[in-house]
Image (cartoon, rainbow, N blue to C red; front, side, top):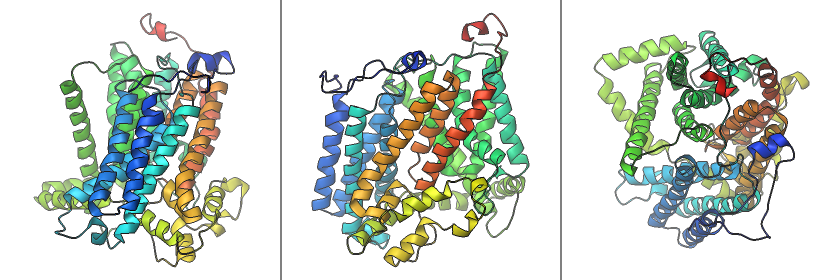
Length: 498
């Protein structure tokens, strides 16, 4: 099932420098699972769903996509398989849309009403949108397996030195300063008329990556006082991530799991033990998400409230005896919130009857990623994707779950949904390759983790993708300066990392 396909027709690749050869895969051999098996399954179910757009077929397509994504993530984290940017995008799309749809389908009490009808959508349009997600993922899986070399060789381990904890503590201090000044808090980094300062952008960019990087250092460092300090820092960073949003909490943990691949740590034990560990992490994410929901619920109707006030109000709400109502609202919110396919299905269906934007959305999202320092009147052209969709297709949206698929459907309909994920994956992989070859090992790890974090986001519009590439290029220079400082061994035991 997972046997390498040996053929001269497939791509063999080596890095173009000694640094690249040390980090990269020396031979790229496509695996049948991701070249044929999973793509064929997704393509078959996608086409069948398109031809039979029933409510039950919608559930089958969601479960199929979700299963493909979970298997891929399991192979990367537990089986320590190759890491490909394209496959991380596939995980985000198949799990986000597929399991999200399945969760809403299975948990919302709606009698004989179809899921699409419950959300006031056309059942055929919703089924075709889910089918397109599967077809697009099938193509991206196969192309990624054939043409994209793994980001790192399979047995790659990050080498640490005394600059590692220094970077972690300085980065954590920056996050604390961001929280204390209100620049980083509820729902992430604050934005002023579409503008973010250099320092605020650095804090927002480094926060999730630093958490994953700190997990690597904690797992890799010898069992001394420094290891305990790193462990406490991981806990602090997770707590600081809770106010940034429920999805962010999940992505923090998923990225940290992927990051374990860059350490000596290997998940050992039976399937039961691994399942228990997964359950513990799920509970941790659930508790964090519930805490965020308390902060949101406690501050409803209040304007310009600080993070500390939110935390205080949330604690008062929890201890007031009204937690049962909040918990029930949280469960009901989760039932419907995971259905993120509605907006995409509306755009795809509209593109069949009206002229799509022909790249206008992608161009505008790219314009938004241009630094304000190079565009004085940038704020005058600010508008969101929904505004363009309203103009193009006569909708009346205000805030919807933007994604690569929504941008693709708005710009080019079905073809946009199929090929936009491929194009974005190519851009991300090119950026990863650039830093991997031209930057020090530690810097390349940090930047690539930032790229993978964004790739994990199901609800991430094109502007977020462009900003991630821009910031990765910009902030890698800052990291390069930091890690050019001389390293010295703090102890004999830590000296093996130098």
